[in-house]
Image (tube, rainbow, N blue to C red; front, side, top):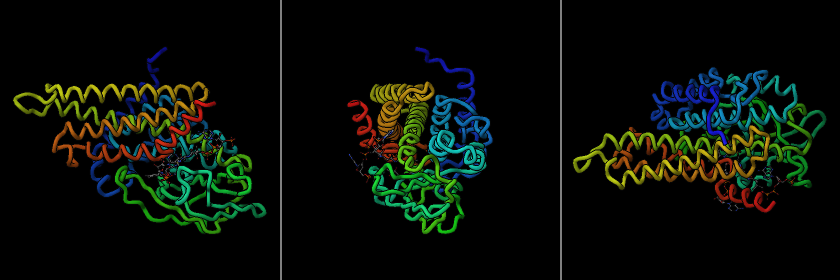
Length: 379
Ligand code: CAA
Ligand code: FAD
């Protein structure tokens, strides 16, 4: 077993770490407070190659592996999980989905500007009444000559307003249940497509979460991705990789909280000594570090399996399930280690605690990850 990173992987990790410190840290508290989307920062991430890390260079990406992707995600999310989720959706749901299942024309037209960071993508599966139960899609796409007519509402869409390319999942043949679902590329500005209200969230507040409404939206047939009825498989297979990205986001939040807690515990004094010297604090830090290391191993294992073209469904679900719990546990302890200072915004850990929660909910809740793992165990 080789745990060493390649020179290329180390370079991307360092580049992302440096970017997070110089470009994301300044203003991260204000963006969270004001729910301000990090538009300029995302442009710069694109220029660095981090919006299409795994996409082939011929399609505008950086042509790197999934291990590089999770290393970069961890570094970005140590500092700013809101920027991290925008990056994750674009990389692992939109670019990966289009590269693996899109037509050559779709790749030329849409993947290239998405992978290079010129445009931002969104992945639209959830609906007001279809979250975990994703097969019960109410959005319809009815075939009509050389196009489809799309009607319905999508909920909670990350990059909802900042995106300009949307992968929209919809039901075409209800009698076939999930085998009748399709996925379409929809451009912002298409008549009948309206971006709804922005959600006022607990965490990842600088990310841009909206509902989307589609009323008689005309979609050319060439914008369907894959064969007729492939939409649900597309969503599930794409989400397997997405879950690795969110697991890396959770890992980043957790390891960021540990770094801040370690530094603080060496500075803050009580009873005549640095709080690090109190065994109660050291034990908290030891538990945090151990859990984070275990989460990192699961995340890297899932990424490694994906890079080796092996089945990673179970590994991705395990990584997300575990890393998201670790993010929750460690950020709660980070606030505790900071005492009263942990409860105010300047020290970052209160934001991290709020940001951690979403990693147990989106891209499949923890309960759904257990369901996926359980089904894999029975196979
Ligand atoms: N990988 C590949 N295929 C999968 C799969 C997976 N992880 N999970 C299910 N499938 C396949 C099944 O094999 C089955 O295929 P066949 O018909 O060929 O056998 C098909 O999908 C239907 O699966 P089930 O029969 O298991 O259907 P179900 O309704 O009982 O369960 C589910 C499906 C696993 C619960 C699924 O609905 C699910 O994953 N729900 C969670 C939805 C989710 O993750 N949403 C995330 C939205 S995106 C997002 O959140 C982005 C963001 O925040 C940033
Ligand atoms: P529900 O499915 O209603 O679940 C409610 C509770 O019941 C949960 O605890 C759940 O685990 C539990 N539950 C449900 N079914 C079962 C079961 N069978 N067994 C055990 N427990 C169960 N979606 C997108 O498509 N694209 C996005 O970009 C996107 N971004 C998001 C960003 C944010 C900030 C948020 C909050 C959500 C986002 N989502 C997105 C939606 C997200 O994926 C869903 O919220 C999630 O899948 C859960 O669905 P739900 O909210 O409808 O909860």
